[in-house]
Image 1 (cartoon, rainbow, N blue to C red):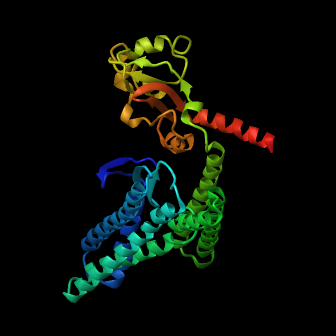
Image 2 (cartoon, helix red, strand yellow):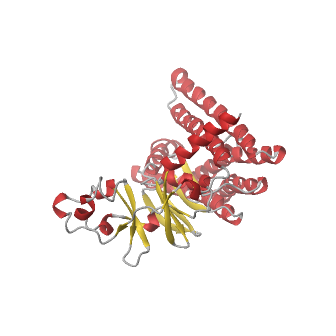
Length: 379
């Protein structure tokens, strides 16, 4: 899930919002402003209901962010690199560059999420009781009580033993510790995730069809997300088992053709596709020879025809900080998630800061196909 709006860094972790987060903010605000608040505390103005509902929805998203930040902070303390956090319609996602090194680390990383939500629920409960004790507005107390309840619900739901929920990670840690086989443990956790997902889809659709409850649609949507994510996670685990010992250096294209950043688009296109530049993506070199970024066909296409003589490749390129990078000795399985989530599906391979290769998602897929075939032949 790629971010649409960056919020900078919190506790050293890059945080962003996906546009779909507006959906959950609007839905929560609508549910509170048009339902729970007027029903529990009638007599207030429509503006008061909506203002408090929107504020409550924002605080709810902050609770989700705290949940994901807890994962990220504990992951870093256990030697797992964190790429960032993105909040979206169905919650949040902490993007980890690698997996936990041990079952114990997996247990700590997964367990801190539900624990954080439970602590948040306890804090909001205490705040609601304190506000009630000082005779604060019943509407405000209602909002804080809802935040307490929803955080407890999140804690319980996330603790269910089904991937990709935190409880699924806890289940995997247990199975991994018991069997010593990470792949087998992942299969067990993802199977539980698909089972829970189908249960939610069936019961959610049943609630809509037989009880007329539109809330069943939300349960069905979450269930479908669980099925899709658990299935993808199982495939990723299988991929890791095949590519476990493969390094980036073995699949990359070594010594790729690079484009000087001062090259004009007109000059560049004069050698495409039959001249020196025969590919669809190229590293870009700064005047001092260091890597500056990446240029692709799609980026070049943004230059208007009448301005190509004055526009340089450096003006259009994707700057290096926005391009995935790896070292030749890095495991391919750790690079692949970043490749698949990147805009250009390319990574530059650097050795001591010097360009030594380029790798695409297609390169990894090709290697995977051959390795899978070879493995099948041996069996």
